[in-house]
Image 1 (cartoon, helix red, strand yellow):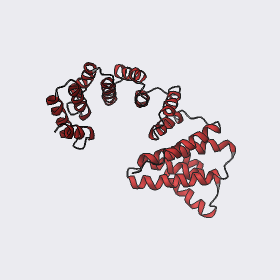
Image 2: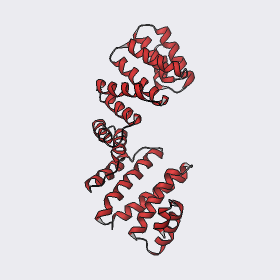
Image 3: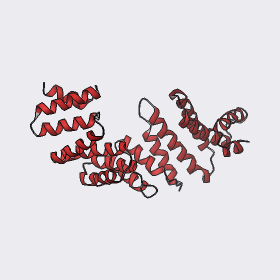
Image 4: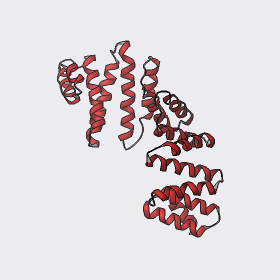
Length: 265
């Protein structure tokens, strides 16, 4: 039985069995839902990109068919899973054209009254992909009501930075730097904080952030690039070019450093 295999988290068995059942009844709603859900989880766990693509396409296909005859009480959950499927498809595709579909189905799920702890965060990430900054901030702020994490705080800070709301961005960045145990997140936060301080012409403050990064990771391309910007604004082009050359030794295609080297040839 599909339900038994589902309870055992045997998604491959659910996927294979549902295929056989659909050969006899192609539009069996319950089987389509099982097929779509199992395909989604197989896509997420797939180790090869091509196989993940096949599974996620099947998940979307099955769930879109399931919508046609879904009962009202299950429709919201199917919309939610379709939103997640499109979100995942967007993340593994060479061209990111599916964030709008993810948002569309998440909104439909909300209209049906469906609730999930992670839905607001998925919506925030999808809005960010669409450069819908204020919508992204609103969704991320809603997500904080369900779960607060340093990664989520950084996402909010990034969106506030895009909206040129520097004071709000810095508030979240300071919080991450002070409390996080994740060095990767701290470095990303310090890079964004340093760039924000440069925009505010606080070059001493920016230098402090970039130096803090380099003390932990001498091979941070973004920190060397930021140091170059600090020196540039202080009028020391010799040191600035030196930092940008270091950036390119670490990351040969760094667009900002390439542009600056060309500018000051």
